[in-house]
Length: 261
Image (cartoon, rainbow, N blue to C red; front, top):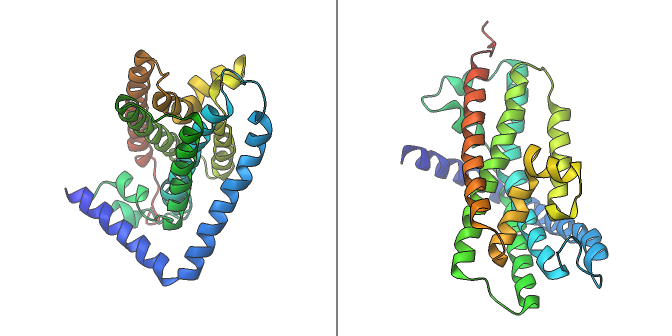
């Protein structure tokens, strides 16, 4: 309950700051929606009025794009704003101010700042999923919705854990900015169903950088085509990755050289 209270406090602080600059909030939200629409152009060209690609029709692939847009909002609204500041804090030795606080350091650095306007991405993602099912002429089953929510939670854990591993590298490597930008660029591939990729790329985007877990599996769950064992394996894999990320972060803290050293 204490950490939920702290999380609520950080969210209220970010919302208050956003409301102080209302026109900036509106413009930023409009630009986020504009980029979402622009990102639909290559998808529309690749799937509209064409035979299924990798077993995915235009409507079913649109569900994947919806989950990608939603997770993009999570990445840019909740993960990036906080964790990218950690690199500078480590470089300047000012992480001391976080470590001295009577709360878990990983929690604090992960909830420092939220870009509230990114909620428009989440709304756009849900809208795309809704449009896809309207075009399909059906609604997802209750079991499909529950499984999709579980897959979405696992996707969020995977996304966050990978970022923790990237940021933890800053304790040993002075600059990890390029690595962060590389992952951000690779994440764009998650807008495509993982079965579209062939050969080594399918293996990479399924097991090395699990983009399939992030967007394709939640979409398949909502569409009712995700195998039960795949869903269970995804949840267990996400939990294991979270444990690995936590372990790496804890050891990385031991390598931190503070400003007072």
